[in-house]
Length: 499
Image (tube, rainbow, N blue to C red):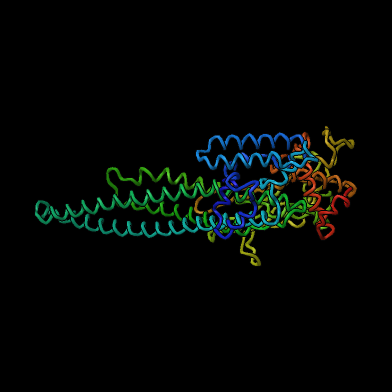
């Protein structure tokens, strides 16, 4: 969903604040007309690149021309023409070749306190929407439980009447018998209708869960993982995992409940079935879809809650020194009472020719009594050791320096619940292994560069062809570092501090 559409969905009290972002020089209707174009531009780069800003400014005027030509209302076309003329003369005479002045002034590249407040409001609305969808799904699944029970009672009644009728063979041609047969047919028709109805409702809910997971839950998880990267290099404090666990858990509970409902419908078919019975026709495919959703939901819920870090350098995670203990923590975001909590997690180092895990690499997940009862395991005493080679050789060496060689820790477990066996696997963010403290600054530079410029979880060849960073990106991470080590942020002094 575009930023502009998200803003339009805010509460009225918040929409009133949006008015302050736009004035007569760049009114809100122009922002709406150019919404898709504005949000597709790299404004941050343009602010620091005069030639790019000039091109974008020209494109902005062209886009205004396009919108104006398509406008049917004469008065609106006239107003747009005035706005376009104002923009063309807005560049100060002392910087005629520097349209970055306009770029900095337009609401398209805003980033002040009000804009941050709006972003927080959008995030809050997104969370509220997610809570509502999950709650509606849970309510629908609960109602289907009642519907299945109603069908079971109806079927028991039909089964009793049918068997009773069969036992009255001597009255087969009587009028009473014919009336009873008619009654049974009516009951069977009603039963068939109810079976089709519950299957239809299940199909709708399954599709709703599928859409929820695809369009909202997975993106929320990816957003958390990206924020974890930013937090690792000094960015804003990471939160939201407990909320994610709640969504994952409630969604998983709904899926397992539907699975049990399908199992129950299967049991009912064993007792009573008939020609064109919808349950044998539709149940297998629906079961496969539910199992598929459960499988992928639980696999994605296995996450690294705390990235590898040496206790002696808590502010520089993802750098591991050989021979020094480090810690890491993994967590399962699906919390189910029937889960076998003796879930063993094994951690392995990547297939590096140089290092291996010296200490015990297998632990059992357990419930955290002091938190929200999540299922997790923390490895507190892991240690890497450098491999010994004959004649002192380490084999073929790569072209990268030690501080640019990226490695990762993998975590594996086997999850069994309600007859389903799911192999779990996740990995840490790429980490740097050093053998001397003097390599720490270079390793930290690599960690910052990686997590700043990519959201890929395991691109170990990143420094084979690393991308460039623009100044707006670099200045932000420098600000985070200043704040982390100086305990405060002074945007006016950061350049003096670092240069």
